[in-house]
Amino acid sequence: MTTPLIDVTTLAQALDDGATRLMDARATASAVPTLRVVDARFSLADPQSGAALYAQGHLPGALYVDLNRDLSDLGRTGHGRHPLPDSDAFAARVGAWGIGPQTEVVVYDAGDGSMAAARLWWLLRLIGHARVRVLNGGFAAWQAAGLPVTAALPQVTALPPYPGQFDRSQIASVEGGTGASQARAGLADRCAGGRAFPGRSGTLGSGRRPRAWRGESAVRIERA
Image 1 (tube, helix red, strand yellow):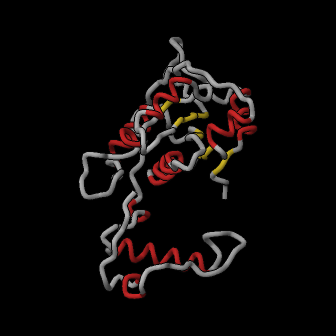
Image 2: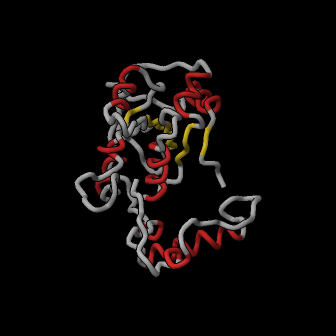
């Protein structure tokens, strides 16, 4: 299986090799980049800080996506802090970012544990786009390597909506319905056989009471 991570050296080489053909006024619809870099820096404590940091400097050719605006639907209530966006709306956004089925995507955040890059990685996989990796160590690793940053905004040629839909079988319901039960059973089975963590075997533990684990009593769930 292809690793979900890419290191800064490999990405820098790809950018140097011109794998990303940045859009300019002379670009045509056929000039679709083979690599799209996405900046997903975000702070729950200061939701505006990610965009501000992007404006100060980002990886060459990177465009910015916002956790609240682009990767969530805050208009949905009762679904946690960051509800999933509508599948069709997300497909339209992906196309607007210039990402098509053949586009290689690299996404990064600050590398501070914010998990915004991981969320975009998951959403792209959920809609059927397998060509996506997360920059190992994020923006912090890029800076530590002394690699260049820029404040220049990329000019992106929008594509049609991404031709995919969220795979709902991969989403477990917080209410604990059939999907959640299947997800728990599948995860436990995979962990026991070492398939969730290649090369390892063991037991996935839970701190909940047995009745709560079996779904026989209510539990309090902290929503992200």
